[in-house]
Amino acid sequence: MVRWTLWCDSSDASQLAQYFYEREWANLYLAKLYYKALESKSLQDKFLLGYRSLRLVGVLALDRDRRLLADVLDVISTDSVILHEILLGRWERPYCLIGHPQIIEQIENIYGKSRHFIAVDYFLMSLDQVRESYGIRDLAQNFSFKKSLIQDFQRLLPLEVGYQKEEVMVAKQHIMTDTAIALHFQRRLHDEVGYHLEYKRHVLTKLSINIMGRSYDQVAGVYTDPRFRMKGLATILLSELMKLYMNHPKGLTLFVKVDNIGAYKLYRKLGFQKKQYFRISYL
Image (cartoon, rainbow, N blue to C red):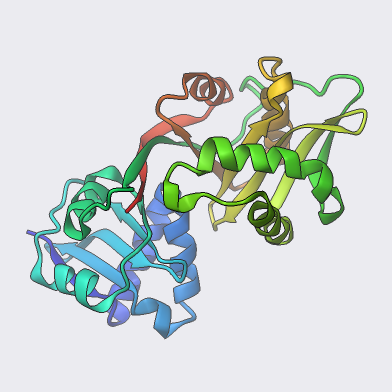
């Protein structure tokens, strides 16, 4: 039986510290919110903790963007009066759920699904330490690996628009205009660390580090210009990124759609290991 409670005291804080020390990789969105909450009581009020026999086995949290973030150690139940009362009575209804499918599927049923509901399943993959033995490729002649800066905005924007339309806009309520994508991307160029591959000043493929944790950084937004796919460009881009992490104490995580076999094989070849399933549900 799992007992659910809000984050209340130093005992909870101690359990959370150990939990994210061991499982930061499992949901970096959640881990990042936890690190922020260490400095903010108002954020702590948006954390639900699941205990079994005095051990923390699950964490739920609602961020300011109305994303409900979740992680669990194993199969646990959400059949709790307190949990239902907080989710349905005290907290805002989230617009999406992010985390381990075992608990995300239960929360979907608690809230109920709108007619626009859609769930996207991923493999969560990690590379705990970058080593030279992995399938890292060298940078070919006339290609350049560059850090993405705000002055690269116009050259990168077509790839970002393509990425958003192909990979992110999976639900009707999540459709964005090109103008909205551009504004969002400008902010991300300021807030995230991005890299891209150029050939004679033409941007071919891009990625970003969208979350930096204490032990892991999360790779996101990997996208290649459709005109230049199947040429190994994403492999080269990721190889150059991995060289930056060579002998670095941090690992890398990412998630890939379960039906994207080509990308999954690419990440496996580069040394990433499948750790668990991961789900994003749009209610």
